[in-house]
Length: 369
Image (cartoon, rainbow, N blue to C red; front, side, top):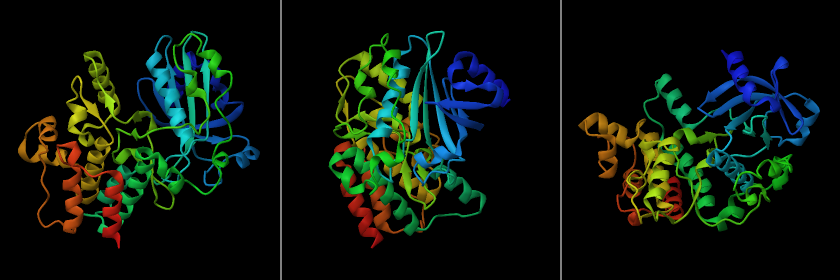
């Protein structure tokens, strides 16, 4: 099975594959292909290990060089959106240096003989997986509920990571003490720009990793996008979904393209109603992530997303429940009213009534005292 997948990919992405020994080459460094982790239509994620042990000194010491994650994005000739998303994802990874946001290791953009391009991104592997994995493990182990202390600890970490996106002035407060370059050993190949001359993209996508950003929306905060470090620190991943705050939709075309993007990239169970029901001349902001945080908190407490549970209870459609804010708190929940109240404040239909990330962080820190 794996060999057939490799053969298929090699036929359109020949430049990065040494098929005879199952190696991937990124910026001249060889990585052994150890297995396929996941695949989508034009994206493949692999477990790899660095081939030359002496090169490991160039990688952050927190990373296990025997287990790294390589994401390969296929960009067919003429598919501007695909390569634009891929390069934006790289830029987002390179922008932040915080223990609450996933690290970036390396990347390369390659031109194939058929005119298509392949974007390769190398990221750390987190053996503890994601919050989704943690919840699944709890079910397997017969753990009916997580402790309030542990839930609050996880939520505080997620809020700190999200606050860096929502309020760039906090970047310094929550960034790692080590210098940014210690976790990055190679910039994007300088020749990559020459591969894009036929693509109307801003060359700024290949610019300095420490660019100036305003407030950003993640748009895909859910259990599978929150990874866990070896120490149990929550780490925000899936930076492909980041958008500028106060995003306005001025035309029907804008609305249609955004709806298509949401259907491909967002988990509806954790998506705010104003995103699902986007309309012309409407606007979304960072409050959509607060809705998602409320859904994540509910899931950590009760093992299921609020609107998934409500769909099972009342039989109404998921979109109806989300659009009208229909959910319920299980009776005799083993959690404080203060924690339940945070869910209620996050899942307000009127986005203006939701707390800011900073306010939410303060509320959680108060509970943890």
